[in-house]
Amino acid sequence: MAAEPIPGRDTATLPFAFFIGDFNAGKSTLINALLRDEVLKTERRESHALPTFVCRGESHAPQFSALPRDYKTAHRKSLSQFQGLRNDETNTDGYLALHALTPANPFSRMVLVDTAGMSSDSASPPPEFSDTRHAMMVVVTDIEYWSSKHNLDLIAEYHEAFGGALMVVANKADHLNANEIKQVAGKAATRMEEYGIAPAPRFFALSARLESLRYAGDDEYRRRTKPAVRAWCDAAFDAFRLALYEFEAAALTGPSSPELDVFKHRLAQTVVPAAEPSHEV
Ligand SMILES: Nc1nc2c(ncn2[C@@H]2O[C@H](COP(=O)(O)OP(=O)(O)O)[C@@H](O)[C@H]2O)c(=O)[nH]1
Ligand SMILES: [Mg+2]
Image (cartoon, rainbow, N blue to C red; front, top):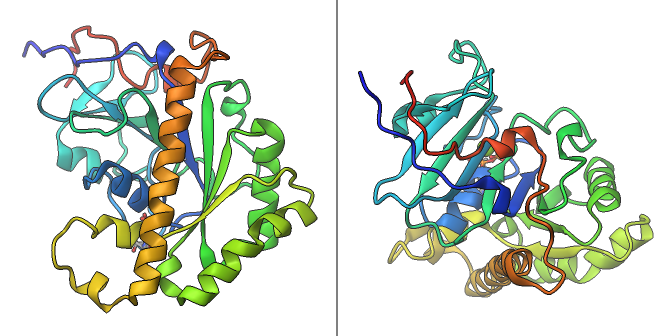
């Protein structure tokens, strides 16, 4: 069967936002909320998910593909294949990563990367990221244990490696009351600086879940959430989204615009395969 080419982008010109953190922290839910689309599968248990790269596609329909071990042309997948592929016995082809091109993506160029399966066992940045110069790191934590030693060590490592290109998300703020959220957010910078993470990265206490339901009309879960919590979380999510747009804009247009041709992460470079025919679909 002659396969159509997989529409692509030249990844050499794209900035990346890597979402890092333990499984179940809400990375996939957060990315879906940013996209306002249920692209990534979310689940409560450890999922052995593959690293997943999402960016805007030019085609009117979303396109999904999987990167084979030889880093050659990605194999096109359906949405259900894409959402069903796990890094377990179902991954018989040994795929390294998944790609999604979504037409309604609100980020014009930035690639959102769900690093599931890359970071859950280890507090160190995966070595493939070490020459990443055009990447924003988003450490995603559960607000109830964001300041655990494990998380602070993770933040400290990324802070050292990526400096200002780092943000911390304390997710699931809907589990706390408004005063508790304010307290956590008010003390976050001091807590990090006392730990030696200085200057403290930006910190957002928010709820990916509340955000994902925000435009769903009259939603039961949002209605049950206290108005003060909802208001806080909505505002924090807006601020977080804006911070990502600012990073994207700076990466693409700023006077100190990074050299966008030096991104060397192998998985990322092949994120969006060039428009060449795929023979194995
Ligand atoms: N209450 C609440 N649950 C959340 C929130 N974000 C994610 N979850 C839930 O946490 C679980 C793990 O989320 P997921 O996005 O799959 O986490 P990941 O493993 O980091 O990708 C799922 O059951 C989500 O529905 C949130 O803001 N509030
Ligand atoms: Mg996930």
